[in-house]
Amino acid sequence: MMEDVQRHSVHTLVFRSLKRTHDVFISNQGMLPPVDEKAETLRKAVKARDTYGLVMDRVKQNALKPQPPMITNGTTEKQPLAITDGSIPGDIVNMPVSGAMPGTLAVSSTPSGGPGTQALAPRKAPTMPKPKWHPPWKLYRVISGHLGWVRCVAVEPGNEWFATGSNDRVIKIWDLASGRLKVSLTGHISNVRGLAVSSRHPYLFSCGEDKMVKCWDLEYNKVIRQYHGHLSAVYSLALHPTIDVLITAGRDTTARVWDMRTKANVHTLVGHTNTIASVVSQVAEPQVVTGSHDCTIRLWDLAAGKSRCTLTNHKKSVRSVVFHPTLYMFASASPDNIKQWMCPEGKFIQNLSGHNAIVNCLAVNPEGVLVSGGDNGTLHCWDWRTGYNFQRLQAPVQPGSMDNESGIFAMSYDQSGSRLITCEADKTIKIYKEDDTATEETHPINWRPEILKRRKY
Image (cartoon, rainbow, N blue to C red; front, side, top):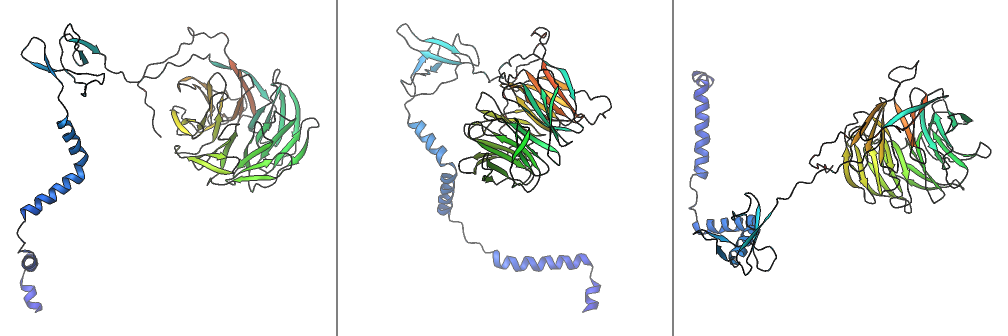
């Protein structure tokens, strides 16, 4: 047998194998039943009805409709009369009527005097509204005093002073008008990451990487309460405007709601899967919004202590969320885009693209100037309504600092919205204000009308 196999070439053996396979299958499949034409026709009809049933019904309905009357305009060619007032069923017909511009829709009417025509202009594509002019911002004060990166800022409701927290573990309170240091508060044993000043009590709240949340009595400049519960660093905190509750969030992926007086942990808001970088609060629903490194934003029901909805539009970590002071909207910052949302369900409005950096912080004033601060020391100023980027600034690095120490970690407007306070990696606090000498002629809007392209994600 082995000798017989070796006498034949590979091609011969392959051909014989193919022939045997062909013979086996032709015996089973060769005798196909005859095609029943009636059954085949029925099968095709069922398939067509299933796939194109709606279209076929619409065609039949149109065939049964009475045709619009035909009129003549002195020539042998007849033209259909298009009626748009709904008195006789019929569609608007794109027709070349004498006196009408080519490419426009002509509406014909038949008054007693004879047929008349009226040309309707084609509908224009929506265009971006012209942005409001804002004066440019300029640096007018640099405050030094901290010995580490300045990580957070909060402005007092009376607009007389502001507080900053730093990696040197010290909270400093500065006079807003003069920039002079008023007092230094020590007590944290690690970096201070969040500050908030109460508008209803003489209290300052702080949080840091030491897992501590402290309440300072500003009449005595002492810690009167501490809120224990976070399992890791606390990165952000917010005060509810009307209720005596404090919301804190951080690296343990939870946001905690505290009763300000009893120090009780009212709710633990669970749902994020990574560090929560920013938490903000407002009176109206949703009362709490959080942005996280898991690339999502969550809107929370404060009464129930549960998540109302999760916004997953961002593709990278969300480091800052800010409410607009007068509109029912908020903005979120991420390296991919700055996005604007409408409350209460978090409807996406538009992207603000162009700040190509890790955006650490946002601030918006009642005039509609949104400012974003980047990890590379860049400041971008935007018109809130249109998303127009009307100014770009590079924060100057202080002498003795390296160029890579130009990051902006936090920012806030004062209560009037006329001064912007930034906290930076060169250990300084910078204050910006609007340029009083600028006009629309000296700093015109470099704006080109564009087709409105709002991305759906």
